[in-house]
Length: 611
Ligand SMILES: Nc1ncnc2c1ncn2[C@@H]1O[C@H](COP(=O)(O)OP(=O)(O)OP(=O)(O)O)[C@@H](O)[C@H]1O
Ligand SMILES: [Mg+2]
Image (cartoon, rainbow, N blue to C red; front, side, top):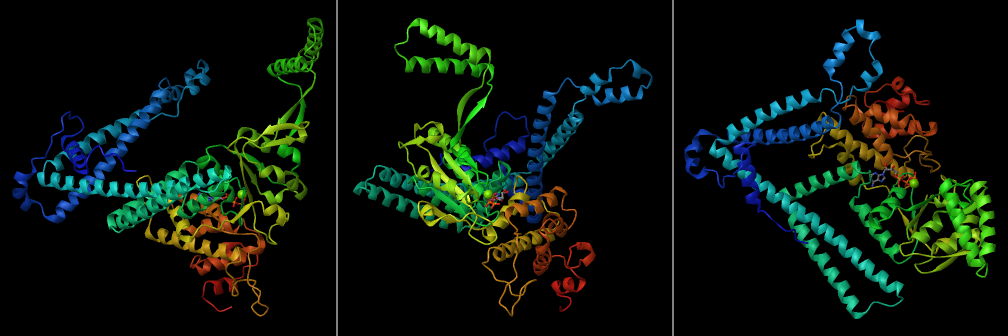
C-alpha cells in the first residue's frame, strides 16, 4: 500500500523553489538558497502582508507559466502535423490579386489552408510572455526572504498532497479487501465447499485491515488541510471520470458496485431496478468494463424481441469472396469427417460440385450467427439484458434456464440444430428494468423467475453526490470553479435541492398534498406523470449554461431544456416546484409560454399572492 517515496517533500519544495529562482535554463540546482544570512536583514524590508501578496503573485505566475508551456507544446504539435499548409499571408495576397483568378487553381489553394493558421503567432506570443514571467519570477525570488517563504509554502503543500494521496490509497485498500473477500467466498462456493478454518482467518484479517485503514483515514481527514485537499482531489477525479466516458463513481455507486460484484462472483444473476434515469444501464456497463474487464454483450429489451435475437439465427446470404472460400473449405472438411471412407475420386467429384456451387455461383450458403447470449457464454463475457421487463414473458421464460449456467456447464442451442456449447468462465448476467408501477407499461416478471435473481433497487444519487457531480462538471482542471459570480454557485445548490425533491415526488417517496393537481380532501397528492429531474436532465441544463459562459440565469436553461420539453400535464407543477426553490422569482407568465399557467397561479407560486 505504501507508496515508494523517491523525494521527501522538503526536497521537492527545494527543487521547485530553486528552479524558479534560477529560471528555465539552469543545469545545476543549487542545494540551498542563501537564505539564512540575509533573512534577518530582509525581515524589516518586507512586511508580512506584502510577503503574502508576493507569494500569491508567485503562485499565479507559476500557474500561468505551466499553462503557457502546455499551450506551446500543444500548438507546436498541431503545427508540426500540418506544416505544409498555405500561410494566412499567402491567402490574403491571393485574395487581393483579383487579376490572377483565371489562372489560379483555387481548389488546391484552399485545400492547403489548414485550420492551424495563426498558431505560429500564438506560439510566438506565448513564448514572449513566458520569458517575461520567468524574468519576473526570477526577480521576485532574488529576495531571499521570498525564496525561503515560497519554499516553505511549497513544502507544506507537498506534504498535504502526499497525505491526501495516502487517504486515497487507503480507500483503494478497503475496496481491495472487499474484492478479495468476495473472491474467496466465490471460489469456495464454486467448489461447493464451506470456508475452511484458514479461510476464516484470512477473512478476519481482511476485516482488521479494513478497520485499521478506516481509522487511519478518519485521523488524516481530521486535519483541515488534508480534508480540503482530499475533497478537491475527489472533485478533480469526478471531473476526470466525466471527461473519460462520463461515469462517475461516487461513494454510493461504489458500494452498489461491490454488492453487485459479490453476487455475480457467486454466479447469481443481478437485476437492477429503478426509476427513469437512476443510472441502471450505466452501472451495468461500468461493472462489466471496469470490474469484469470485458465489453459486455448487450440485449436491448423490446416487445419485438424474439428468441432468435437472443440465441442467434441462421443467416442466408451471398458471402464475400473470402467467406466463400472459407465456407467451401469448411464444407469439404465436414464431408471428409462425415465420410472417412471416401476415396480420392469421390472427394474430387464433391470438391468440384462444392466449388461450383459455393465459390463460382456464389450460391446462398447458410450460416448460424450467434446471438448475444450464446456469444457471452462461448466467450466468457458479461451479458447485459437492458430493460428486461420490456421483453415478452414467453421469451424470458425460455432463456430462464440459460441465465443461471455456470462456467463448465454445457448447454444446447436448439436454434442451431442442437449444437452443444460449453459455458466459459467469465459469463454472468446483469439485467435492468423499471420498478413495478402504473407508470411503466411493462411485463410482469413472475415470482418464480425473479427468485433466481438478486434484485436491487437503484435510487437516485443522494443530494450531496448530485451536487458534487455537478460541481465536478463545472470546475477546471485545477479544481477552480468556473462560474461567473457567487449567485451561480447558489443556483447549483438550489438546483440539486429541486432535483432531489422532484425525484422524491416522482418515485412516491414524498407525498405533496399542496402541489398543483393535489386533492387534499380526497387524500390525493400531486404527482408527476412522466417527468423527473435525473442526472441526465441536470446535464442538459448545466452543460449549455456552462458552454454559454453563464451568460443568462440558469432559469432560462431550466425552462428550455427541462420544463418545455416535459409532457404538458407536468409542466405547471414543475414551474411550481422550481418556484418553491426560489427560481423564477421575478418572471412573468408570458415568459413561460406554458399552457395552463395563469398569472394568478404564478403569483401564488412566487409567494406574491394567495391563490
Ligand atoms: N454515475 C454517473 N455518472 C455520470 N453520469 C451518470 C451517472 N449515472 C447516471 N448518469 C447519467 O444519467 C443518465 C441516465 O443513466 P442511465 O441511462 O444509466 O439510467 P437508467 O436508469 O438506465 O435510465 P432508464 O430508466 O431511462 O433506462 C446517463 O445517460 C448519464 O448521463
Ligand atoms: Mg437504462
